[in-house]
Image 1 (tube, rainbow, N blue to C red):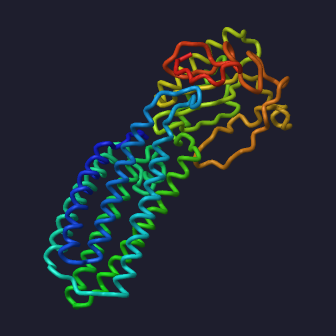
Image 2: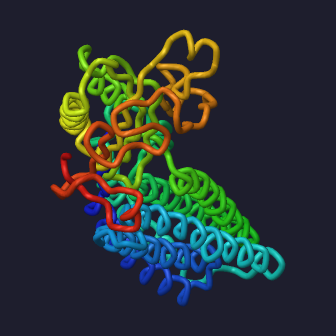
Image 3: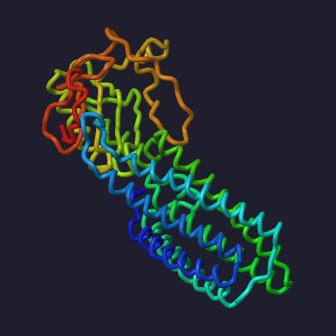
Length: 378
C-alpha cells in the first residue's frame, strides 16, 4: 500500500474549514445558536489539525542526525496524535459544555436564516473536501474496505482527514436538525441537544484517531503483502537457503527497516556470502522500494538443533506478520552456529551485511553506531 501523505486532501480540508469557521461564527453572532458556536469551534479545531498535519509532514523530511540516526519520519505520527488530542479537548469537550449550558438556559434562535443558510453552505463545502479525501484515498486503498484502510494505513494524514470530514458532515446534519427542531417547536433545548450530540461525535472520532495513531507511534510492521515480497526476495535457493527469522518496522510512512537472520550454505566463502547478501538486498528494494534500511545476518541453520530448541535461529518461518501471533525467538548467543562475520549482534561488513540506502560507505560497526544511517545499496 502506498504511503501517500494526501497533501491535496489536507489543503482542501484546510481551505474549506477556514471559510466555514468564519461563516459559522458570523451566524452564531446573529442568531445566538449554541449549535453554531459549537460548529464554529469544531471548524477552528479542524483547521488547526490540518495545520498540524502539514507541519508534521514538513518536519518529517529532515535528514537523519547522530542523535536520530533513523531520521524523523515518525514525526508525522506524533502530529497526527496531537490532532486527536485537539479534537477531543477543543472540539468535543467544548461542545458538550456549551450544549449543557444551552439545555440549562435555553433561548429562542434569532435570525433563523443565518444558521440555516450557513449550515447548508458548510455541508456543500465539507462535501467537496470529503470528496477530495475519498478520491486521494482510492488511489492507495486498493481492494481494502474503508475500515481496513483506516486501520492499516501507514500514512496517518488521509485517515485523519477522512474521519474529520466524515465527522464534520455528520455534525452539520446534527446541527441542522437541532436548529430545525428549535425553530419548529420554539424550544431552544433542541439546539442544546444538537450541540451535545456534536460533542459526543467529536470525542468518539478523537478516540478512534488516538487508537490508530498510538499503534503507529509504537511501531508497526510491514503489511502482509510487503512481508511476503521480502521473504520471496531474500532466498536465492543457492547461497541463501532460507530465512531463519525476520522483523520489519516502519521508521515512517515511506521508510521501512528490514532485519533478518538468514541461513547460508556452510561451505561458502565469506566473499560469496557477501555477494549473495548484496544481491538479496537489491532484490528486496526492487520488490519493496520503501525498504530503505536492511540488515541481513548470515547463520548456519541446523534442523536438529532447531527442533531441540538449541539453535539461535529457531523456527525458519518465524517472519513477522501484522496478523500473526508473536513467536518467541531465543536471543542470539556468541559462539553459536553463526558464520561469516560472527553471530548474535550481526556483522559489520562482508558476510554479515547491513545496508541502508543513499550512501556507498561500509556498513556501520559497533564503534560508529551513533552515526547517521547509511542509505546505500551495500
